Length: 615
Ligand code: ADP
Ligand code: MG
Image (cartoon, rainbow, N blue to C red; front, side, top):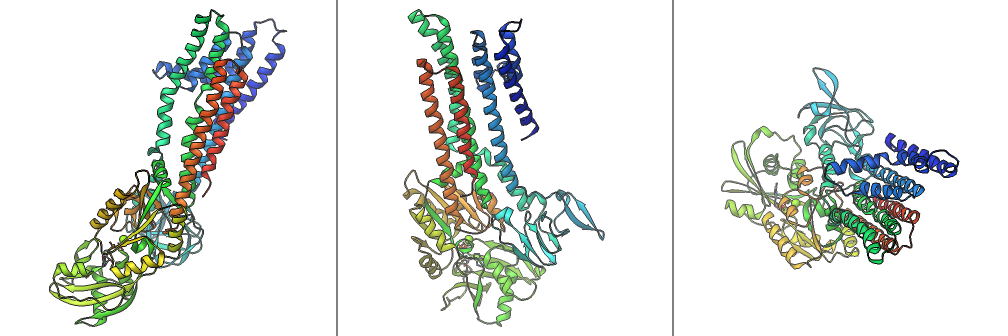
C-alpha cells in the first residue's frame, strides 16, 4: 500500500470506531445526536464532500462524489445518521480496494517494464565514466559489467557473455553473445564483461521504444472501454434525475408523506453509483495488456486486443517470419569470374542492407566487409540491391531485378532462393541460398486453426517453388509467391474484402519490406523487434522473440480479456438493475444498498485482476 492508501485505511478504522462509539453513547451525551454522528461522518467523508463541492464549482457536477455527497447529506437531513456515516464508510472501503487493485496492476506492468537502465559506463579519454544513458552518442564505446542491464543498443567489440532477454521476450533462455553480435538494450548481462560500440542513441534504442509503447498503450481504447466512458457520462445525470422524480412524483400523486419517498430516492442514489464498471473495465484491459507483455507480446492498445480476439484470417510473410531468415549458401555458380569474387561482390553490394538475405551473404563472405568500397547504395524492395562497388554498378537480387537491368540471365536448376549478381550489361552468375522453417512454425499454424482462425495465408517475394515447399510443409491454406511489397498490399486487400465483416485480418511480418501491409491490415503483427526498429513503429502488436506461435497465445489472451470485461459489464449492470428495482419498490434499505454497491465493485475488480495472468 502507498502512504496515501495507508492513511485512508487509518481513517476508515478511526471512523468505524467513532461510529460504534456514537451508536453506543448517543443517548447519554448532553449534545444533539446529529453532532455526535457528524464526528465520524466528517472523519471519513470530508474529502468526498470537498471533491463534490470543487466539481460543482468547476461545472462538472455529476460524478460518484456528487452521488455520495447527495445521498449522505440527504440521509442526515431525514435523521438517518448512522446510515449516512455507514454509506460514506463503505464507499471509502470500496475506493481503497480499487486503489490497491489498480496500483497492483500498475506495479506488475512496471515490473515487467522495469527495463529502463539507470546509467551507462562509457569510455572517454582513457577512463570509464558513469553517465546517464541519454548522454551517450552513437559510436561511443560502453562497458557492460556482469549483472548490469545493457543501456543502449550496441555491437560487441570485445568479450563474451550470456544475456538474459526475459524482460523483453518473456523467454528465460539466455542468449550467448561475442564480438560482432548485436546486443539489445534492456537485456541483462549475466556472466562476462563486454565492451561494445553503441549503434543508436538511447532515445532510439529498443528499450526506450518499448517503454514509450507501453506508456502510450492506454490512449488507444477498446470499443468496450469507450462505451463505458460514454455510458458513465449520461448515466450519472440520468440517475440523479431519476432520484429526484422518485422523491417528488409518488408523494404528489398519492399524497403520502415526503420522508418515505425521499428515503427511497437516497437509496436509489447509493445503489446507482457506477464505480464497478468505470473502474473494472479499463482495469481488465490494462491487465490484459500487462499479461501479454509478460509473455513477450507487446500490444499497443486495448483496441488491438479487441481486434485480435476476432481474428479470422492470418497472413504471414515468409522470410524471417515463418522461416529463420538465416540462409545457408548451397551453391555458387559464377559465369565469368572466380567463386570468391562473386561472393565478395554480393557481400559488398549488400553491406548496408538489413534484409536477412543481405546478412546471410555477408556472413558467407569470410572476410571483413570494407564499406568504404561501396557507394550509391539503393535498396530495391522485393527485388534486391543496387550499389557501386569500387566505382562499378553492381546489381544483386532476383529474376525480376535481372529483367529490369536487362542482362542475359538464366535460372538455376537447383531449388532454393537464387540471388543473381550482375553489372550494367553483364551477368556474373548466381548464388543459391536456402532457409529453414522456424521450429515452432508448424505448431503456430495448427494452434491458430485450433483457435478457430479460418484461413492461413503466406505471401512471399521469393520464388514459387520455395514458397510452395514451405506452404506444404506447414499446412498453410494459401501461398502466393513472387510478390513485390505493393502486390502484397493488393493481396491483403483482396483477403480483407473476402472475409466476414465481423472477423479481422492479422498480418504477421518481420518488419522488413512490409510496413505497408502491416498498416493496411486490421492488426499488424511484427516479429523480432529485437532486431528491427521499423517493426515496433509500424506494427500494432510486437512478438518480441521471433516466435510465430506466440500469435495464437496473443489471441487467447485477447479473448480472455474481452470475456472478463463482458462478464463485469453484465454482472455489474445486472446486480445494479435488480437493486435499483428493489430500491424503487422500497424493498431495499440503505444498508443493503451500500453492500450491493461496494460488493459489486469488489467482485468486479477481483475478476478484472484475472486478466493480468499470462495466457
Ligand atoms: P519475403 O516476402 O519472403 O519476406 P522480400 O519481399 O523481403 O521477401 O523479398 C523478396 C525477394 O526479393 C527475395 O526472395 C529476394 O529474391 C529479393 N530480395 C529482396 N531484398 C534483397 C536483398 N537485399 N538482396 C538480394 N535479394 C533481395
Ligand atoms: Mg520479409
